[in-house]
Length: 204
Image 1 (cartoon, rainbow, N blue to C red):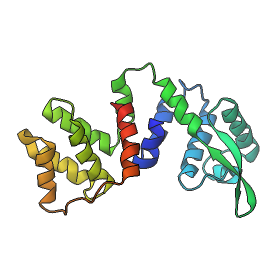
Image 2: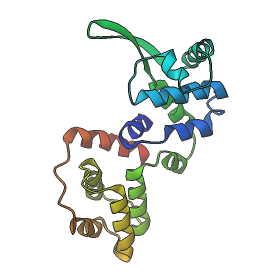
Image 3: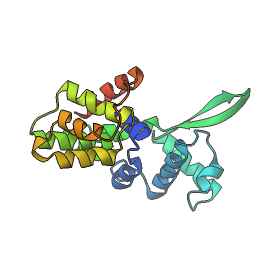
Image 4: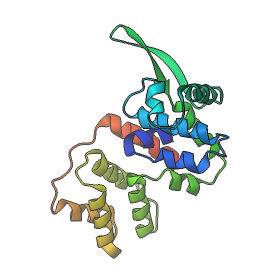
């Protein structure tokens, strides 16, 4: 799921998408509030807790329970039993929400989903392609991926280097600007490369 990968790896603002599209997703405002609370909890832990949700929304426990049940019935989340250290606990998954958003945009044009799913990395690709007036070659994409995967350069440094390159907006030239002050990146991790390959296939 492209949106899930962008959310987990590049901090995609899934909350903004939900706020914008909750009516199209056929969510009520209280349901959306509980779903946003679940996303707030999601990155810290996946243990399901009415108390944790109640700290983030102005609703009582009974209402939260009803809304969680509604979200499950509508197919936005699942709750499963998990065993940790010999103890059973309830954990929640939000994969169905990512899938519903992707299905929502399936019929929309490609440009719209690119804008909604834009992250630091995809913004860089877009700026390069605008400057070059063409799509990036596979070896150019690999170089850009390496910059972000190895975290040798910050996003701000990369964007600044692209803008300062002006008419010489090539990946090689921008990398030359970046390496003047920063050491050369290390080898890209193979697992990360494979995962990012899958992302690029879906967002391009």
